[in-house]
Length: 104
Image 1: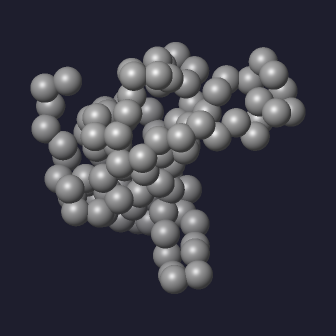
Image 2 (image 1 turned 60 degrees about the vertical axis):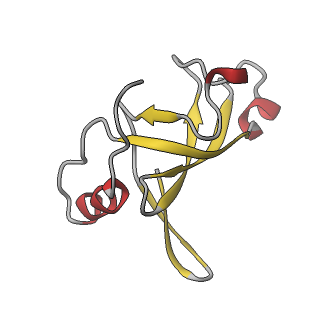
């Protein structure tokens, strides 16, 4: 992927969501962390594998869950430091003990 990271886009994503505006299209983020998260698979062995991930835009980070449906996410295909273009995503604001937090 030759695209550069979308600097500062995470703030724009959550502001757009909070104000009912259209979410930015195709942001490019850096993967900070990725790990398997398969609670659905434990209940349903045919469910698509899912991964918990943390993404950075160069200024801040957000956490998210990636479904591997239609993607090749396992092994060396996606790892820490890689860039990822989000072509489809949803925003789900959450709250932690330190205040507001967000998930992609």
